[in-house]
Length: 314
Length: 312
Image (cartoon, rainbow over all chains, first blue to last red; front, side, top):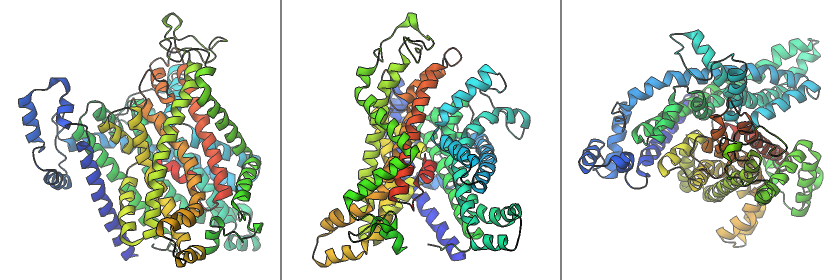
């Protein structure tokens, strides 16, 4: 186990190094010169030279990379092309909004997936199974940004129940946060919940056909007790990891959903950076997203190995 | 494991009793079609896709109005017999734009998946066939691309290359490459040591010939399934990118872009966002249904819809 942990950690470090190269290269893929492009029509030679020197663009590329990497490791991602503020400060200011949204979304996903998946498996082949399966199929195919707009149309503009935009930090005003987070979290949760539902169902069905379940039935336990004590417990192990992975994948959806609901998180920041050609912020936001994604994946892998010692550490 | 492997690397003498063990290519094709037709959802998916194909090709002829014809006096008109999906903020006919938008969405998705298919399958074949260092280098590169949420990578690429339709295709193509590389490599590893490959090798077949004639045909099943599922997600990602203003640019009608335009007039005109979104939903569902059924028929071991959805 410890050998697996060490190997998996090393692997994550190698991937993160690769990610850092990609993220660094991004800015240098800008057609022409990123600083000239960022300056647009307000170009003047003196400021240009100054900015080039300040961002280290006059050094050879590999020197720039190692300088950037060395600073990045210590948490220094340079300063914003636009505001001049340290990128790390900007990113950390946005992080709580994104994390609290992702967390709320995964809670919604589980509230959908567990009952739906369990009912679907226990009543396999009956009407409720078909309905649950159909619902999850719809959830998987529905574009989240369209669902978000339809929610706004229905719950904000027509019924006036929930605010379409706005935010309050969870730590300061939980009730306002809850009112604002509901629609974005449900939007993201429906998609992830639909994916998890399918896993819960298939995982339950597999556990229900195992020998230990047959034994439990054979010794005369009521079906309800068999399901609760023997099936669900075993079936939920893979579900834990799928939920973790969905949390990581949620990060992609977060970007679009934050844009729609004007949720002041990392996704919105990323899009603003793209629009204003603020390449250092873009670079930092992409790096932070990838880092969170990688950490969640790593934790999920380690958790899986810990929960289910039968897996082969391949 | 070896039994599983044979299910899609079926040598000609394998009998049909194994469910998906079909003796020859023709019968496999017939079996696939029969399996798809038996599955009602897949049949529905095929019908939707067939309709889309017709609309994609003939959309501009079928459209009752020109998709970019501005008609300000008639702006934000609700659905009626004249314009079944209403008109948008410039008085353009939403129904005609949805029809013509089908071509744009399908085209971007198909080309993007085409790019990732060619790149990913080539890389996967090389990695799986040659193994060792080549495999390590290629697959670690793929791991790096996999370390980004798909849409994030696409946004980042478009952020630096600039928002155009061509760049959107390239971005989505890059994003989907690793999944094809992984699927291909995994399958190559399982057929590489099959007797018929060894036999061909011992007869002196070159690497290229081995890969082209013996390995590639036997790893196609999971790749086809992956392609179908990836098309669904390419449609979704393209729509999302266009919705963010990073994909197809106006006045070209694209479903995602139409949602963006409609968002500003949501209060007055729900139809401008409702119908293009519905079109995206049906298209994605159709590809998913067909992908699911194809997987059941061709490659029962794979859970690609679920896994790939995560990627989107």
